[in-house]
Structures are given as C-alpha cells and as structure tokens.
Image (cartoon, rainbow, N blue to C red; front, side, top):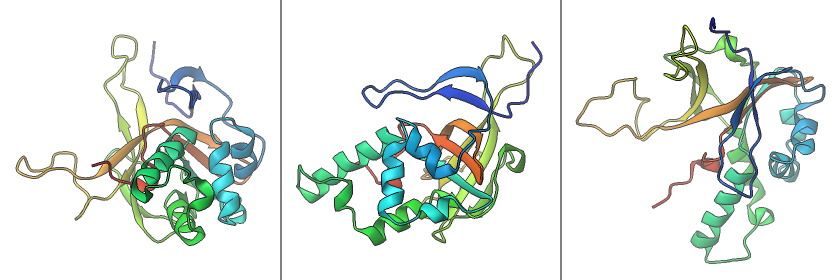
Length: 212
C-alpha cells in the first residue's frame, strides 16, 4: 500500500486507569468542531488539562486564534501530582495546590501563539518560542515502522525540551549524553475552531519534572 501522508493519524485515547499506549485507529476527521478548550473539557483523557487551564485563567489564551497546543493528557498530569506528593511530603497534594503563577508558566510551555500543523514541521526540527517565552524544538520525523506495509516510513511529530545546553542534533558526540527530553505526539493535527491540537503520549512528564 502506498504510504499516505498522514494529515492526521487519530489514535484512540488510552485510559488513565492503565499504562497502555494510544493505538493506531486509522485516518479520521481532524476537525473537532469546537474550540480548543471545549474539546479538552469534553474529552475524558484531557479534561484534567482543561481544569488546569481554567484554574490558571488561560482559557482565552488556548482559545486565541491560530494557537497551537501540545496537550499533556490526564495520566501525565496525574504522574506529576504523584511526584509532587513525594517532593512536598504531602499525600494530599492535588492540582489545586499548584501555585497559579507556576501553573501559568508550566502551561505556557505547551502553547504556541501560531498555527503549527504538521505541514509546518520538518525532520531536523526547528526551535520555537512557547507562550511562556521558553524554547521548544518541534519536529516531524520518519519512524521505522510498518516497513513491510508501506513504501515510506510514517512521520511522527515530536515535542522536545532543551537540555542543559543547546539542542542536540540527530547524532550527538559519543562522549556526551543527550539530555534533551523528547516526547512523541500520539494524536496530531486535531483542528479546533481556533487552532491546532497535538496530544502528547501519557509517559510525558508534565512540566518536565525529573525523576531521580
């Protein structure tokens, strides 16, 4: 079968109750027919993100015209809360305990004030400035999968936090450790009435916290 350029590969959203990954559900209609915030609020795997956006008073930010959101799902946020319970030594720590200004800053790293659908992204990646002023590298990279069924490898969107220094290229020096934090987008190119939504896989560390 000739490889079909993936305008959107809509994967079935996985449950927060287990650690299964999103599974290829085939091509689907990319238009969600509502605003970015309303889509998050209506989806059972993204509604915690909607609560955080509401608490941070950032609904107008994610609903602004031509905005792109890389959306951490509920499992990603739940794991962050577990992490903070250890750090704060407080087993009752919840999303309402995240300081609002910290929350605005964290969420701002997933929001881009421009339309960034798959057609704008390139394999070698490009550094973009997120809403909070921080850098993120966004890429569209061919992945060696389904080689027996497709003439070309499928391309996946990647969202990358910068490491301590500059972004590494595809082949970092052997003597150095690549400390970039790269997350694959499991559902890309959802088109809301105001912008673009890319959903990150559940293993993503919300706010880029580091597990010791």
